[in-house]
Image (cartoon, rainbow, N blue to C red):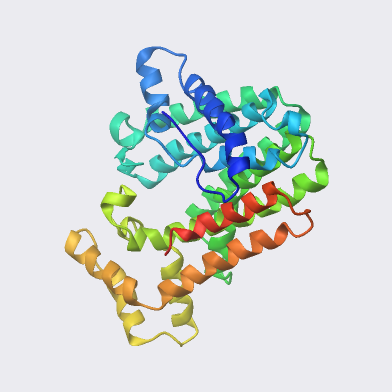
Amino acid sequence: MSVSAPNLHVPGLESRIQPGLEAVERHLTTSVSGSRDLIDELTSHLALAGGKRMRPLLTLVCAQLGDPDEALSPRVITGATAVELTHLASLYHDDVMDSAPTRRGVPSAQHQWGNNRAILAGDILFARASVLIASLGPEIVAHHARTFERLCVGQLNETFGPSQGADPVEFYLQVLADKTGSLVAAAANFGAWLSGAGPEVSAIVSEFGEYVGVAFQIADDVLDLVSTGETSGKTPGTDLREGVDTLPVLLLRRRSARGILDAQGEEILHLLEGDLSSDEALAEVVSRLRTHDVLEETRQLARDWADHAVGCLAPLPDSEAKTALESFSALMVDRLA
């Protein structure tokens, strides 16, 4: 599958990293296969279905902050591939936990092969990512291990929910930081570290990546409501049907708890307590949420997190790579227009 960089408004940089994106794709294709045909079909299922390759792209952009001779080195390509493998592995596990019927517009692995095989496929991909990471030195190994821990902690916290007295919105944002932000942060860190940019730059782009990852997931909560099934690959409001309170709903509940929720919002919360198994009932709730101002509040939160990400880059000198990172952050929320 061919892959190309999105418009980062830095044509020269985009041209430089394009060979890297193609190399990552080749390496990824090799990494998701290598067993018997039946297993390869399972472990390559999501990789072949496509995806934004957002994390490898970020690795390659951040590698431009280091030694130019190392920006497309085998170590950088290996790190970028390992990050994407880790992401793919987490998707297999997420779909089992969420009972998701589709992913990237195709049947999810657990839907097609069953939970047990999907879990094991995810484990295989985690293992293959770890083999790649092991060749990159102890700092990268430790960072990857801590990231893997945060992915699991975030998923577990999502299943347990917030502690009594905790702010559900703040708790939810921390779950997003662990489940998504941590791996985006690792992708940025690996690019800077493996290209020799140094620990200070690596820390800066890592913080940037965490904020960008959260912004991306907040934007996804909006898109789950406003996008069509044809563009997103799933029915709008699927999370609501599964009983998952995404950020717009959590913000409504917070207004209600503070006694400042309007009648339209209270009616939405009432509908959410009902049976959403029919397409008509789900469409009614989605329609009401689309017209409530809580959706714009959620959009603005995504923009705020993206802006904070850009603010993290302030210590870096102006460069094509910095401009590309600023564009990358904007891309995470431009989807909301």
